[in-house]
Length: 163
Image (tube, rainbow, N blue to C red; front, side, top):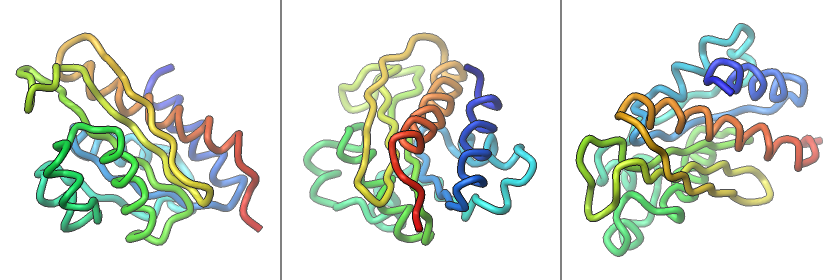
């Protein structure tokens, strides 16, 4: 599934449910938000987002615990979950999305290129997926966007709409 198809599916599901979304992005650098806002009608559901590329901003802006970042580094499943939960809370959204990982071309903190964590946070908690992606920097970033949007759509299917 390509990014725009994944974005359209997620946005239309959110519009139907009258629920909102926010995003916290690291390796995707705003590509999740940019992809979402291409969909007509998105203003009804997209609250905004954070691009927290620097590790200290993950704590300061998105509320990721500093101890977690110090212990595990920014490329971690629990960090992805904390990013999603933090942006959901700080933007007042029903759903929070997050991406963190290594796009390349070099490994980061001993983590290989293509290791990515995507997360979705909702009322009932967070779901994280670990991805091991191949390809160049652009391919890793693009596949990360598609993966987080697919995870949102899957999470929407599994949860009941808010009342």
